[in-house]
Amino acid sequence: DGGITQSPKYLFRKEGQNVTLSCEQNLNHDAMYWYRQDPGQGLRLIYYSQIVNDFQKGDIAEGYSVSREKKESFPLTVTSAQKNPTAFYLCASSMDGRTDTQYFGPGTRLTVL
Amino acid sequence: AQSVAQPEDQVNVAEGNPLTVKCTYSVSGNPYLFWYVQYPNRGLQFLLKYITGDNLVKGSYGFEAEFNKSQTSFHLKKPSALVSDSALYFCAVRDRSSGSARQLTFGSGTQLTVLP
Image 1 (cartoon, rainbow over the protein chains, first blue to last red):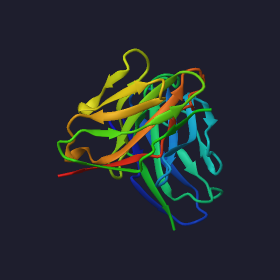
Image 2: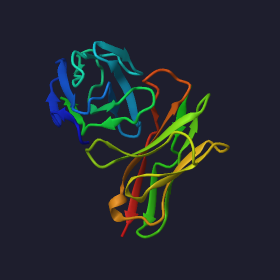
Image 3: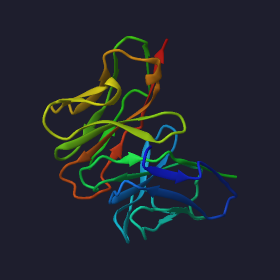
């Protein structure tokens, strides 16, 4: 997990509220990613960014939004439009998005009540 | 399109015995292949990867994996299992011909339990 921090570790929100998950890296990596993990389903890509001020939708982007204003930061907002937001969210980064290994943060567990 | 399959949800092995966690993949071109490990409520930790070259890849904590192109497999192995190896293991694949950063597909994971 070294070099990538996610906060908070646990997050509880009421249904209908937007919530923002933080992801910061000090590895000087260009590319950053957000994944969602549900039991028995592996990881699914939500959004990714290869460079500052640019990001692309992944496989399950609906109900989520991101920004990449700084190289080291890639926050994820879970909006009220996300129908089933309770999950474990993982942020990752890589030196470049094409060939390099992705390194993961410790994750944020979001529970919507 | 690319995909990866981990056919076993659960693998149990006795401490000291060899372990194997299976992974098969499908890509249109040639693959990059990865293994990650996840401990409860933690992020994924990188174990090893195959890019090119030797089919036997050595990684962290004594793990290794063998790339078999004809069988489209990349099984994770360790000669002598430890109780501390008990965790959730993920295989991932990327098609080398893909120019997009998003193209890392993960398997559904295999829970390894090493029994003392």
